[in-house]
Amino acid sequence: MQFTKKYLFGLALLPIAINANADTIYDSLSAVSAVSAGFNLVSNANFGPLADSFSTGANPFSLTDVQLALTSNDSSTSGTVTVSLVSDNNASLGSILATLGTISDTSLSAYTPATVDFAQSTPIQLAANTRYWIEVSATDDSSAGWSYTADTTGTGVATEFNANSFQVYANAGDPALALINNPYQLQISGVTAVPLPGAAWFFAIAIGALSALRRRHTFSNVNQA
Image (cartoon, rainbow, N blue to C red; front, side):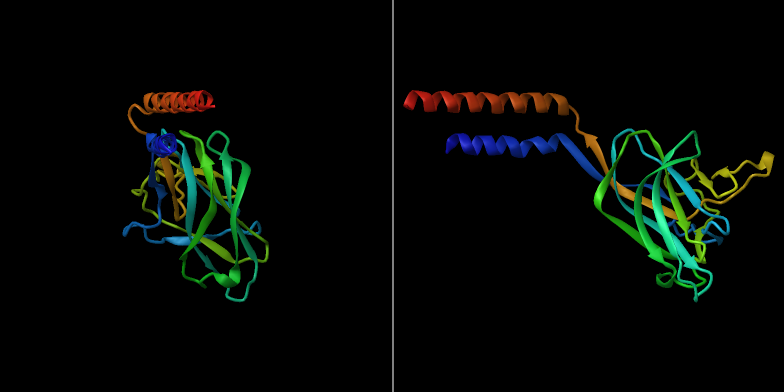
């Protein structure tokens, strides 16, 4: 019984070597100043697909929630909107990594953008220091639109990119080339894994101690036999 208590106590200590922090790494949606300046239609028959890029920080990130400001431009349409996680290819869209969710035009607010939440039941693990894209596409019979904002002061926004079917644009713009296209309204949330100071030493010591306890317990059982 004494061994069991020590063993379980050691196992309970192991997870504290890594601290998981709730984190929002991109947000052009929630700030008071991030008001909608309009919306672009997302179907292939219009400007779509549309996309915003975002980047992870120095530690791995678990994506748990994506929120976007969407609307429909025609209350009678019933097309389907798909939201996807896409890899980066030199500041352009790469390949689709995961489908984050779908929604029908009939579930969108008409003419006025509103926040739509695509919560992930299973967190998606993203690499550290890596750029990704959120792509919004729609069937040709969709009138869905994705709201954009002129505000680039939100977390992670100013240094990223946005894209439509014609071109990729820097969120900060390039006035010299007259290339200014406002980022779409998006929020990326999840959990950042932050190793605590001395975590590697803690793991080594904890594992060594548990191994010693196991050997002692085994030796004791042999002697008693």
